[in-house]
Image (cartoon, rainbow, N blue to C red; front, side, top):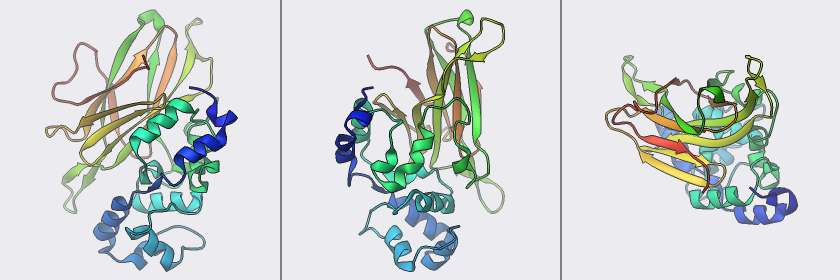
Length: 285
């Protein structure tokens, strides 16, 4: 990716300005389901020292005003109240988002695009430790749910490693399973590793490289190099899918992180489970 974000920040801001809105269907469905449509009760559920004014809450829940909250603190509080990843609250045309990915680095100053997007600064920054950032998960269960893959090139090179993923589920009042958590989102990052001494040793920063999420009957993969994939949810296994990530020439460690629970297990590339949608984290040609 080019360095447009650092050399021409105004160009990226112009591309995205007024093109990112709140995903209002998530808010409205939640208020109806959890608060029987009571906006005042919804407002009291937001854990802010100074609760938003009723007019602000009405604006968040209305179809007329789709603007983002004024700052990241309020966007995160809204995500916490809805129990969804804050990224899922951002309604943006995916083709436009992929165009931005192809033209700019993701570790830019997102707060300069809009103040409420500042939480993305920490999620997509390059870091030696503490990825993903604890500040966000502290608002949810107090931890990130993670899974790891180790690529030792002595065991093989240049192939796609499948990972079967089982999403979190919702339960009915009687304790029975109602269905997969919808939406649920995962962030992916990797770092270079050395296996020369027999013990894995980090050789680079953590580098976020993809997002995958389940929403409205569809799995969506956003590769931060600018590639987009979609797959329909399987009726037989609604909360299950297979994610393939590329194991190249060098050693690497991969981390998958979500704000909500999930289960994973690696599967042989020649024994993929039948009937499951497959998303592949490849590289641009």
